[in-house]
Image: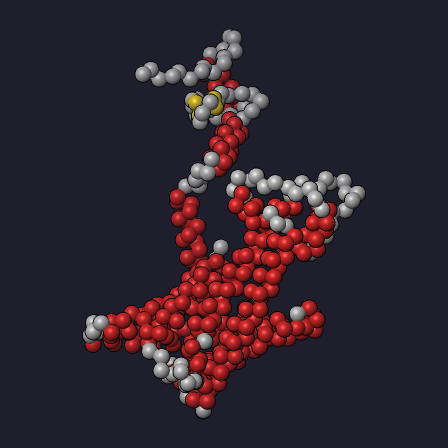
Length: 366
């Protein structure tokens, strides 16, 4: 098959093609070649439009066409680069590094228990499992020593905002304050208990300090679980209010990909007022010179519902992670029914809470 010949560059009378190219080069246009780009886009030099501008316009149009067709616009190298950057951020943060070490610690504890049940343990594997459990535990305690400064600052800010928060949400504030004080006390006692465990220096009443740390941790977890359940109930109540005011929100969720959500005309003004009130958004001024953006009420309600559902899901995951963590202080305090848990149960619970914490730390790197 003969290759299609690209159209020739228009040449003025009395001039040669070389002279015309030199003229364009002196005008600030560098011609590297001609050809057909994309589908139906032909590039040719022009005095009024630079070649780079034409290339950018064609690339943008092609990218828009690919995006509308659902194709991948960015190359894989860009996606890999973003993932690597997020991994680097995760490793550089103290919280992310703590979650990685915690995941390895409890995963090895669970695997060691499974190997013990299957009679696969050897002296080498037993020594390795004990070393991971001790050394990684000390590493996490060292990392928590630096995280306690931020927790103390959060608790101080909670105390300063006491009057305003109590008037708005008394129960939520009290639970959050108990959680903050519990984690602050746990951090201080845990840091003091780290010194003799690491062989740095001895402290008096070490057993009392360790027991006090587990008490603070237990109080913080209980307050966090109760506060999380209360928040989930409130979010469900708000979602119910939205579904009662906007009965087509669920249908809009299904049809959101095709952008064919039908608007409801009855009681439209009342719905707009309620939506603005629930979102705490100021109404558009009546005499504004800038025309208001035409946004469907159901589309706005759909975005709010999606945000509430995401908050509810994240809060529920945190409750699950804290419920899995609560068996550790209960077992350390030798509460009846919890002190006899095996390493398999403790390792499995630690893996669940570590997965929840790892997910939260990973989302923070976005």
